[in-house]
Length: 248
Image (cartoon, rainbow, N blue to C red):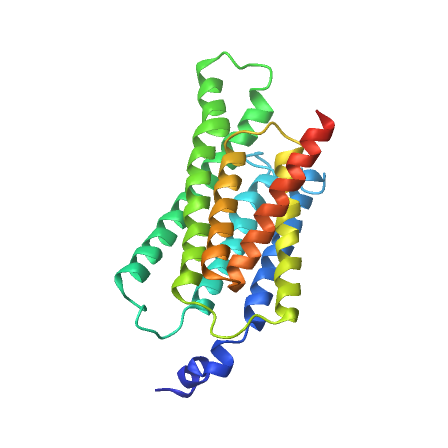
């Protein structure tokens, strides 16, 4: 066993949530950057002279999702540790689910950002031509189905991975605070996505993940990622319901 392996397998380090909080903070910062990129005019300029994409599209496709997915991967590695479950059939199944989810997310970003740009630029006033119908379908329908399938698979895999490798200490009050705070940033992103747009498939996806997180919290207790997901999706869903109820 190397010195590095010994360090990371030592219980006092493997059970520490410091790196988990840091990786969740990366997700929170990424959500803020995604919101700024989407809602501001800072990145609406064209990437190149041929105007093939705007910076907002390029960042949404290649940079910001990559940061999020790398943080998720490191988070998955962080909660895994040596146990009889490691490399067992459930562990292998969850890893495969996670990989499939990552692939679908990447495919959806590639499809959506390009067709969304073409839709906005060329097809807002021409929805009847065959070319624009194809572009609009890829933008509003197909890419969304692929995205939400990948989104559910990645997040469900992480939740079940936490259950398969449960935290071996008691979650402290300090840990609760950090987990809830990071979860609230995601809740804000969920609220912004659902409350101010026409609700479609995304509502059912959020409701599904909320139900899964709350069920695992009830059945398995306060595991770190379960607390994080339960906070993010429950608060985001309730805030959206209240806002929609008041506005409508």
